[in-house]
Length: 300
Image: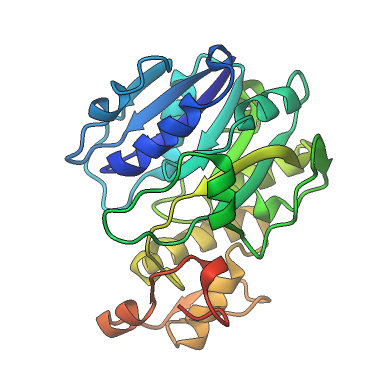
């Protein structure tokens, strides 16, 4: 069995589209869904009950109030609750294409690897509009991320860059997940906890690959470039990653923050010196209403 693991906190609308995509998979008997309820005011059971054919478990995450969202801890909670021998982490704002679950299951049975698939980004929708329910229509709207390589038509292309194995869609055997140490809860808040896991796997000889026929569509949401609302977590997590691996993650964002005068850092640095916090004006200016594939000249 494969276990799809997703985390929600006030994400009922995207969760409904994720579950609808899972409900369109041709064989519902080969997977379960673990929804980690990380709190908030929206209850995921209101969405889950609309999909009676899916095998869904809502796993509450008991934790004290934390100033930064505990992504690593939440994913570990989901993995611990999973019954499957294959784990597939999907962000709540994704829509899996038909056949995606089967493609991941086939690629990891019984092979040890850490795998990702194609991620296609959807554009903003007009108010009160909805995304179409067919893969063909979604693919016509979507665009691939410019930083990610094109996947094979079928099978697995090994030798993938560990830095591009993002938890938006990330799969491995549960035994591999446990062996490489699970998500490191030393990461607090946003950034690098997924890259850390893939580097741990890489350093233990687990091959990384890109799976053909395993597409997810990323639902649009507004963002920041660089993610200045998460600047404190991003800097702290980058330093934690460097202490472990002697290499810097998220170098593009760090370089942007350095050019703004927020930090002193370059690719050859051994530390980050924080000079100041971003101003509210800078945070507002970093706001992007389009995902990267839809930006003109990389401007928001």
